[in-house]
Length: 377
Ligand SMILES: *Cc1c(COP(=O)(O)O)cnc(C)c1O
Image (cartoon, rainbow, N blue to C red; front, side, top):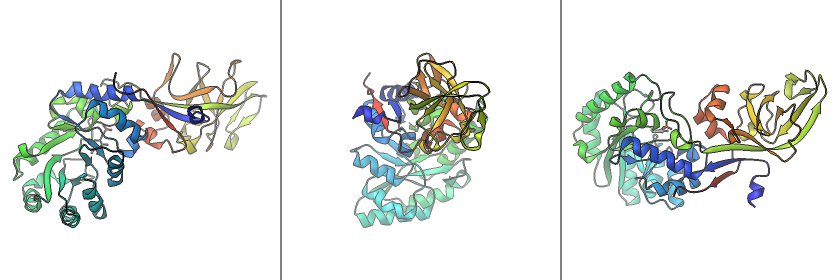
């Protein structure tokens, strides 16, 4: 069974490394702030069930997700801890959020009204955190108008819909310049000071991975780390996480290409001399960025070898000229370590013109996520 999962292409996930990365965040911010690991988008593409099983060992305060469906999935996995839905919830989502005891983030009064009526309809009390927009611009009440909306929110809050937290989100915490985040933090503090409820009654949180590491003083009541847990670097000048995910694929064909032979759609690579080509059982239909065609690198037979030609939906060809020992069935590494060679998710992202987040969440359901170890050591 386990060998079947490795028949073609797969992602290996190191549960212990995931837990160590969360513990690194804990060390950075100290014991006070609540840990709210973000497990949205299927735990950044690595598999929410495996992620939660591992993270439970670190005893987080709760979990952060982006959608009601993701929160529901956590409840079905048996999670009893608080679950924050950090993105705006469409009005229709409030009922399910209440039924599954999810903390809704509220960015406008209409959604708050929906939440209140959903709580009455379900006959169960709901709780919400208010998002404050301090410059991210995609969600939240405007920080400048806190006195106004604060009263309206407080007027709607009740035992049925309990106001339990406030948060904001940094747009540039991964940059070495501290100014933009410091300005956002000041705006956040100004807004909190203008609210009609004492801040001691609210859970205050702001920091993503980068902010937790760069500005431990902004950790406040809780932190919401994501990418760092999954092995993504969060800033050129910040500590590196431990790698968590490795992407592997089988060599399914090897051929000796005569000079002039071409490979892939558009025949964009032609053998200059005799070359040896290996076909790997992974393509853009698996989430390998097509932009890596004629640019990316793969580890085969302990060496870094170039991707040649365009990447197809299902296969990718690499040039292994000079390698006489690799055989069909051997394993190629597209992200991760093999022997003393290593390809980071950042390297792949940079070559593909994107960020690690998009690479990790882009791997498709075709690739089994194979979790190993746990977080207990
Ligand atoms: C995704 C997200 C995070 C986590 O950000 P990372 O950069 O992955 O650490 C935190 N808070 C909110 C609101 C998010 O949407």
